[in-house]
Length: 307
Image 1 (cartoon, rainbow, N blue to C red):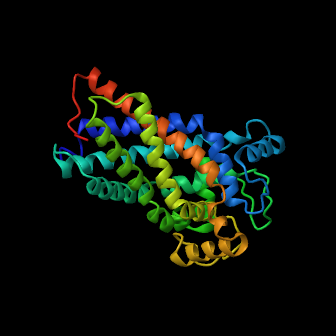
Image 2: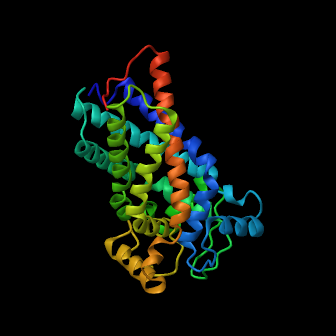
């Protein structure tokens, strides 16, 4: 119990949340481009910079930052939960010993499941708000009119039912492998580098953060596309059985995507996603490592968790 409620876990959680918010704010327009490519199937522009130019031209200069606050709020809560759970579970299981790749994967998976179940409603709302007012090419998309985060929660529960806040939960649970794979590679690469040197440089942290996220994103991208569509929840396609993003809906959306656009349709927007997530993850891990190290130094403490 002491490991779960430890000061060290809190430091890691806060540093992870601050790191993710900082990184996402810097690269937010790339996430906007990625989301449009995933959800708006009839958008012809395929490159990130062309999509961003279209958005700015049609919707205004600040349009790439539409929905920034709800996304940042959700991301802050989500990463706090994930980092806190990950480091608490690792402290309980490892107990001051050296960790292994297998343990990192299992702990990352469990932390991901906890995170998904607690924070999916926030991500459903921020996806809706981020796409509100967008000029879609796809006529199957039903527009929304939310006044803010609270109003979005209210309208979704009133019009679609409480469980609709967990739309996309099934693919999200499958996608816990994304952060699990990411942390597995990150911790593994970190351990290998620390065998050769006493301390990692900022460049080391940036590179291993980028590499680990690139691998995780490429492996799980098709499910991320389905997750975005289910969270948005405004397509007129297949309106039945949308609760929690059932397996039937996941398979239906994957089949429709392949039938319309071929196998590569599952990877539409991957360029924008890789560009955004790789840079965001790299910067997040850099801020996270520096902030945790600085906090432990200022407080005169040493992290008890071994890599």
